[in-house]
Image (cartoon, rainbow, N blue to C red; front, side):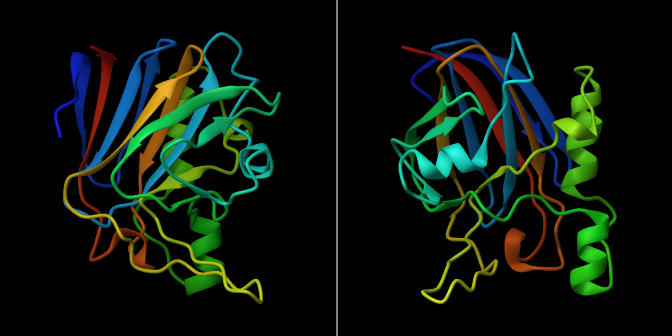
Length: 204
């Protein structure tokens, strides 16, 4: 679980909480699912020009793949690589279902959680002088969304085990923002939200 390199930042992100960090080009962000089946909603931006942000359609269209795994890149709206997955012990990460919100959960379930990923993203982005317009369709690490031949899709129990991780190398200086998903109304977080670990490191 410990990366091979110099650790620059090491944070335990509590269940249901957001986190953000700057990753210099060439450095790596490791996201660890400490207890298993915990979804991590993730966005990233060009640190020097946040208008260049993660773009789900380009991330899907360029490789022709809706799931992310080792070797996949997160592409920007300008069709440039923001980050690349260089190690991944789980695979099958979701690119299509976006984040939970109070409004969405009310429509789907007639109820809401105490927190939601939309709220977490807005709260964390405000620390970087950004706002709700900067919350775009995101990656969901460790969340499983199978798509059937007829186009039907749904969130099901995740595949991640305790200690599973994904390593994201920065292809430019990036701002990474995540929500440690608070969702308890669907299987995104298994039996309930749990802590995760975020490590920024310089590879050996």
